[in-house]
Structures are given as C-alpha cells and as structure tokens.
Length: 133
Image 1 (cartoon, rainbow, N blue to C red):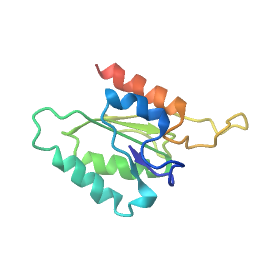
Image 2: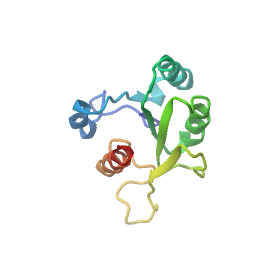
Image 3: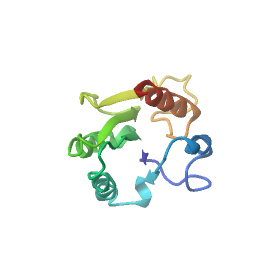
Image 4: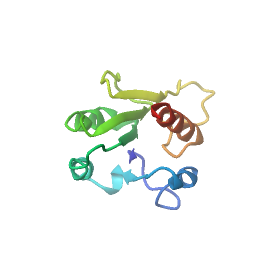
C-alpha cells in the first residue's frame, strides 16, 4: 500500500485492513512520512527479484498514481497488479486497473481520492485480489 495521505489516527495499518493480515501480507507506506518513497518502494520490489514466483500487488491512489505506474513499469516481471483508487491519470498499463472511482458528486461523503483504509476500498481491493485466485 502506497498511501499518499497523511498520518493515520492510530499509525500503522488501518483497522479496516487488520482483519485481513492473517491471509494477506500488507506493507503500508505513508508517502508524507517517507519523502524518498520511490526509492523505498524500488528497494522493496528489488528485494523480491530473486524469488521464483513472487506475487506482489501494489495499491495506491489519486495524486501519485502516475508515479506508482512509472515505478512499477521497471518491475513488471515482479508485480502481478497495480490496483488504483481514484487515479488522476488514465490507467493504460496492462498490469494496472482502477478498482474504485468516486464520482466527485455532492452525494459523496468523502471527496476523492477515497482513503485507502475506507471500507469500500478494502472491499474492492480484496475483490480484485480474489479474482486472481
């Protein structure tokens, strides 16, 4: 999870994701807390380059979607998918797709991009991951 939002109320992984950590390995990177986030993600992905069949999925949102897509393109052989929430760019990479899109209407309780810890985001990300199995 590459989260462009600021700090969480309780730090760490949001409560909406904690119940899933028994079956998913979740690594959460908050971009504001990691100014060199791109090199951090690059290092984490590179660390898996020696695995025979790595299964890595990257989730991110909104304003950094283009940067995440560019970064993952350098690791396409390692990353199964990039799942984006309210991306601010067209999603045209074969390994990427938008899993949630807010319409930005007055009816939206939360303006785009939805936070990665939002229950709707969790539901759609898990749904997308389950489709791979």
